[in-house]
Amino acid sequence: MNLKPLIQSVIITAVVTIFIACGSPGESNNRSNERQPRTEVTQPRVQAPAFNADSAYYFTEKQVSFGPRVPNTTPHVECGNWLQASLERFADTVYVQPARLRAWDGTVLNIRNFIGSFQPENNRRILLCAHWDTRPWADHDPDSRNHFSPIDGANDGASGVGVLLEIARLLSEKQPNVGIDIIFFDAEDYGEHEDKRSSDRDTWALGSQHWSRTPHRPDYNARFGILLDMVGAYNATFRHEGYSLMYAPQIVRKVWALAQREGFGHLFLNEEGGYIVDDHYYINTIRGIPTINIIDQRRDTPHGFFQYWHTKNDTMDNIDRATLHAAGSTVLAVIFEE
Ligand code: AHN
Ligand code: ZN
Image 1 (cartoon, helix red, strand yellow):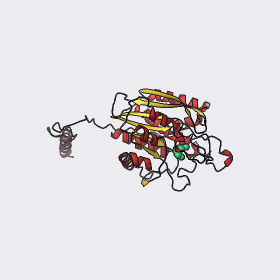
Image 2: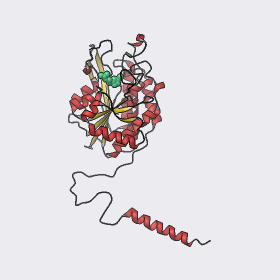
Image 3: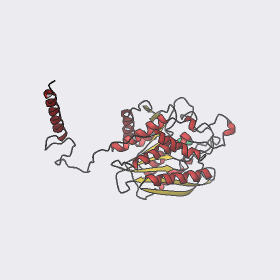
Image 4: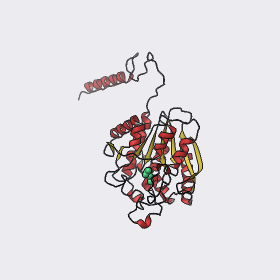
């Protein structure tokens, strides 16, 4: 058997490969042409790490294990302590923002917002957030005897924080080109009870209203923000939320395009959803940071959210790792694309 032609072809292939890899001098394919005026140094993109949905599921389950995280209760204090310790394990700098805020019913809530910052010296920043408190009242439960009983909030609260803790864990191992701030807002879900029906929108999202007026650093700014709310249910559908389109249309387009690219087009639908007063509303209107909401919106429920919204059935049984994976992988793709 004559091996000579084989050896020749191997050598030719190797030479051609080396030539392509090196390129010709004077012109490069990484757009570092010195003649072009440049306002910013572009760094090569970093490959996004793989999102671990089991880890996000564990972080979600851990929060639920403390019990309902209702302000002024022991589970709330203990879960808060665990969130702070977790951020301190992963982030470069952690801020705790305690406050006493008056709720719509006159209750003074002892709240804490937690902020974990990565690359605090980087002035190109992205804000990621979710609420960590849970609703004190299952006021949408089919059984009216539960309407003053607190919820587990596995999806409504814990899922968004679970996804962001997994992202924090991954960021402790590998950094993108931008600085990241992860904020866990308190007292999002203490809004007016359904029985009241005066629908004062400002009774919701007290923690993010407080942070937006008094951020952890007085001069704080970010290029844009992403809020995750209810990102763990089976058959979730993420539609373009109204205020996100109003205040950050280009971010909505970017995020949904990356979700399609990553293979999550069956959850991230290019359809308009409703207008939701949520943490991002106040970040947009008070702080002026363009912020979108990735939130599960449905067409088949009267309230427009998942079927167990504000019910005793918002439990771990109804959390789907695949949904956590889609939300987390999409956010990771966004921050490693910058
Ligand atoms: C209002 O119902 C005004 N906002 C809903 C925001 C929310 C509650 N997200 C989770 N729970
Ligand atoms: Zn809620």
